[in-house]
Length: 122
Image (cartoon, rainbow, N blue to C red; front, side, top):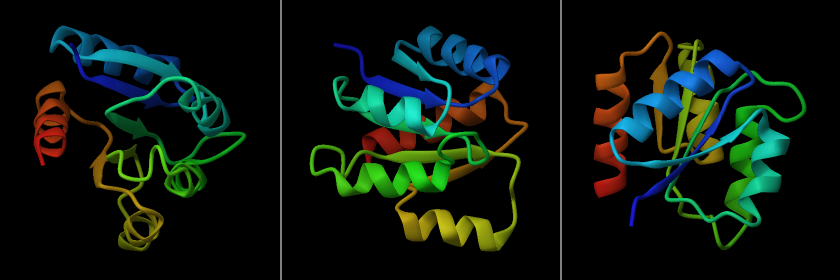
């Protein structure tokens, strides 16, 4: 059975690129348009990993991570931040919230898949 990954980004273009890359590599993808949408979908859709943007309306990526980590069912699900933010302070804030890794946009499909494979195996 394919591993399921949730992608969370308010940009339809980024969600489409993520879905195409991940589906092509054999992963099942659930898309969410922001943190609130992701949090609601996670209640009924168990996933093996979450890839989330940082800056989004409704609920940003850091807030989403904090909420996901409170849920016993998702406490240990790997969460990768995928964002244009590369400041060390933001990375530390993400790590403190429970982020498993950080990818800076723009990214290549190869870079994305390398991180996904590394985190899902660990």
